[in-house]
Amino acid sequence: MAKDKKEAILTVNNLVKYFPIKTGVFSRVVGHVKAVDGVSFSIKEGETFGLVGESGCGKSTLGRTILKLLEPTEGEVTFQGEKVFELGNDELRVLRRDMQIIFQDPYGSLNPRMTVGEAIGESLESHGLARGKERRERVEHLLDICGLAPYHFRRYPHEFSGGQRQRVGIARALVLNPNFIVADEPISALDVSIQSQIINLMEELQDEFKLTYLFISHDLSMVKHISDRVGVMYLGVLAELAPKKEFYKNPLHPYTQALLSAVPIMDPRAKKERIILKGDVPSPANPPPGCRFHTRCQYTVDRCTKEIPELREIVSGHYVACHLVEKG
Image (cartoon, rainbow, N blue to C red):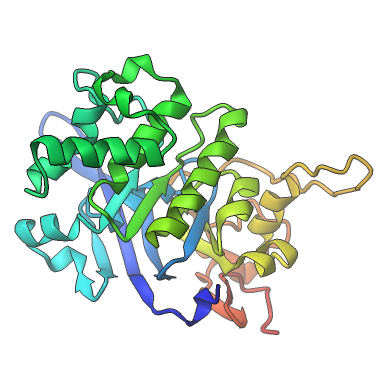
């Protein structure tokens, strides 16, 4: 399917999310954690955009801020022509039918006092879309589609395995017929044997319901399987963005190269050089000047320590934020 010809369903422009650091009796603000610091990209209709990076790089914060589950500090998000951050509560509530999220922790995101049927069907009632028998039939149909049985409607979250609970989370995200879903590390809390089942289910649902995904993960092998394009975040900023094949075949940013060097390969005879990064990730409350990766990069020059690199298009569709990468 030629997804590159489709228009963007979501556009993120210079998105910033800072968390204040407070201290003392009067909660005086003494600084900010710069979780997301000027990120821009777009996602086309029907596409899966993979977002990767180490823990703490700002991936999940970015996903939740896009949905306005977190209040943005600056920037703009446009979804289906609507400027999300400018909408009032009532308008945002209507838009949320089309924008949903699958959480990382399938147990923590479900109310233990609610049956699975109540948890999935709750939003149908709150949006006035279905009640009673109609609501139950809709929920049972979604349970069946997501690989569970209709009789699971009456059961509680603690009665399910981790993989089954994530299927419930997926069904809950689908119940309002959304167009766009943020999948916030949906497989990281699951056994390896279950992860591929959930990925396959998400791909089947994407084809059936014409979904667009923002797939957030630190697992580069899974991202390679499901994504059309891949973006890499480091310390709150985008380091690289490219179509999947180009990304894995020709990584240009030193950080991306290091990440990919750590991905296990199936062929034991194949040789692969592992790139070991020096030092630790700097604090997002006090990121280094210039390129944020320069403190761990083996190629650092003087310019890297002073000047922030622009995310530039090096070849068609391949963007890199590095002073040392030349245009092709």
